[in-house]
Image 1 (cartoon, one colour):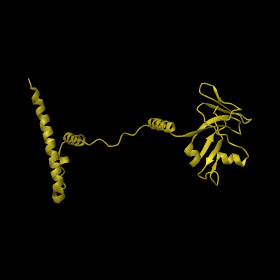
Image 2 (cartoon, one colour):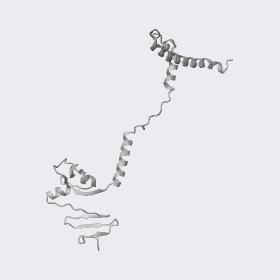
Image 3 (cartoon, one colour):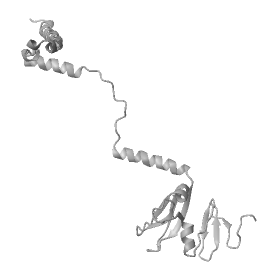
Image 4 (cartoon, helix red, strand yellow):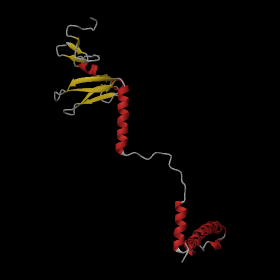
Length: 199
């Protein structure tokens, strides 16, 4: 009966022989650069194919390379979700105007939100959800007009006015010029005949 260790001896000899071969290969490369007569002898061609594979895999897979410093790239869906979360957080903290207007081409009335910074320093376009027409609200970058323009300027040229309002509840502007304001419980704060809140 053969002992268990007798089968391991040839394997150990193979491994130690491959390490010796690797050392010889490295030393022969060093010598081959120094003497032209040793260049023609390649130790890897002397070894049997099985030993060459063992030596190559040990060289290839025994490295302890550090992990990359950068994170793995995110998928497109993850990246868009992260950007959307950042935009939601930014929108909570920035000052903004809420505008309700009627689209002249289709007659659809809609409400939109625009940042104060964009309105006073940038160019703001609002797209009608019904007909997809785009309406210029302000142009401080000179994209559509030669001079800096806001919605007030555009309406002033046509002889119209823009009604401003600020409230913590609901605000209604009627065509006859009257304004009604309601708090969050629905109680009327400001009526048509009452122009200021001091009562």
